[in-house]
Image (cartoon, rainbow, N blue to C red; front, side):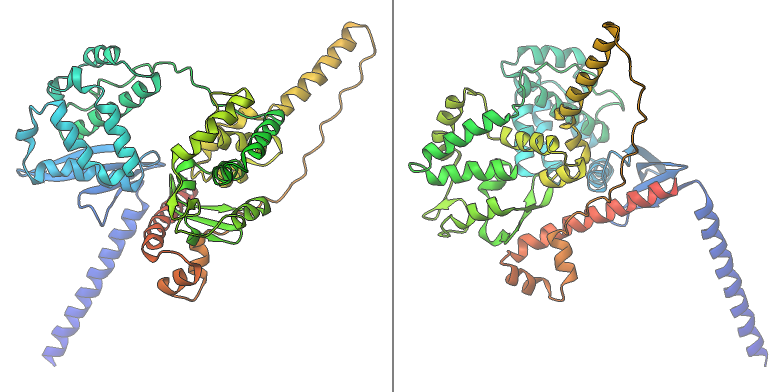
Length: 457
């Protein structure tokens, strides 16, 4: 009997302890200032304070807590925050701070590019290296901690390169300095590149008009007999707005009727919804290799394209026209045909609609119409004519937003097949598709987290 009473007392104490713990959790959830710790990088946390959230790092060093704020969660994505946190925490784990204290820019560039491999694609990594090495002749032997704003300005003035190349180099150097701050090599906020005015570039994107499109089409037709393969490649870029690199890497296994699935485009997985003109173009190409644009097993190269692209643009009277301008021109045509920004964003494969918003200025038709109406009104007033009463503007009809087509990953998740069987049925590489699926799921989780945060405001 006594044993039963002791056991019952212990049970009661455990129940009270559980209730107390539950009340503590509920109290924490009701607070407007709390931290959600990452389960992958120990020490990385998302601090939520009222309606704002920031990434922070925390570590225990020599019995003292060290904490650093990395930046706003709206501008820094989870993957980038993890890379930044790992770089900052490593200085306490490997005790290499003393070794890096006097490191020169030339040596630190190697460390920086190696630390940030996971943040960028190989092409971005090589682009950063190309920009940074422009500064090495002037700054390479200086300690990273001692480089000043005047040093950067002087080095920039000594670089003999195009304005765009210099601008990209400054952007890469600025990111390198921020990385140095994370490692404790420089004082927070001491980035010598911040606020530097970029060189103005005389580059301007070209948007083809209707007449220029006609001349462009005539140039394609005139050369289809001599270079049908290159003409098909250029026509594909014009019809889809694809980037040159995306078209060159396109495989037949990614083409499924009206859907072209690119597992790893510039901004991640991308789907091109091809209309009849694109479908007819692809049907006319021989399937004699892995890639769509390959002849006798050899992939198309930029040299193959430039041989015919140069005379086409010269005949058009646009010698500076680039293949990428075909993408800009497709966006311009879509805008002036009345398509919404959401649709054009999907057409171009932009994850962020702010990228698409850069084309908004191309919609000149409403401005021209407004100028004509205002001009007629003022002409009537100045000539002493009767002025008609201003009409009340009609309420715009509410139209349902077009539903975006399901992605290739949505279609997979709706199927009942496992990944290998589904990829085999679709003619896709399982390894490539699996990597793309992982990235897509991460993007979906981030979007859900952002939506939840917005709804809580």
